[in-house]
Image: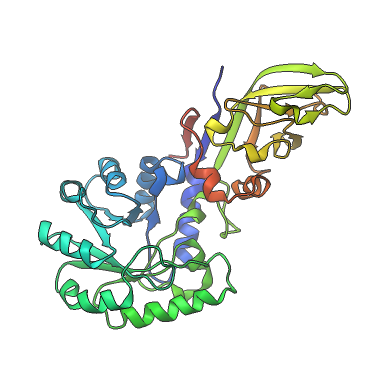
Length: 345
């Protein structure tokens, strides 16, 4: 059985980063966690470093250590999860900068690596990570006396420009970080699009780099082509796939493709998601199974050797809408069995 081909256009990705960097009033970094949103953190970060990105963000110290191997010395690698109990050696050996999220993390870092730089993450209303105002007030003087490189927070509703929490978090961030001596950062992709008031010294574009909303003018970055394993004729009234959820309402030509929910194409797409042969849309017929999809190709003038499920005709967000999820999940779920091809390096 063949495997799907996932093509990542690094030229398009770099163009998206440049566009978001131009919109940013300060410096633009890049979020490359979750293996560069499924696109390959090493390839993405290496290309963006050539474009001028100097600050990169990952979720965990383990991700940071892997990224340092690709980037080499120089670029700053910031770790959102901060300094966990088992992270000291990774932070030290790979020159990582943890975003400290609590007084406990601050105490751990200052005791274990007293001369190593760090950032601080503030909770301005998302209630997920970061110090709340009382903890920050109690630790601020000590933290500002050391190698503090960044004070940041994260917006909960930036993809909804009219949501009142955006302005509330902005006001809280300004209040909590007033007169801070270190650079400040509040905005990822959505926050950049909210305007200069949200930008501060450093922005952290993420999903917009990879072609996703809310950056509506982003260039497509990924194409996922799935090989046709077999083509068969299905008679009127015959059923297809697990639980027989598709019944042929006409004589149907069916293509079986090599991909399934083990590859990140979730079952909610069953009987709904389109795939494309050029500009021709063909709909899934039957349940998505672990390794296979079945697609109605009756109306195609000829059957190609592959069909595209991500392509210029169907973005990650359009596929996500059909699947009842978001573009982030589509990208980060793309499986390991695909052949990844990076173009435009």
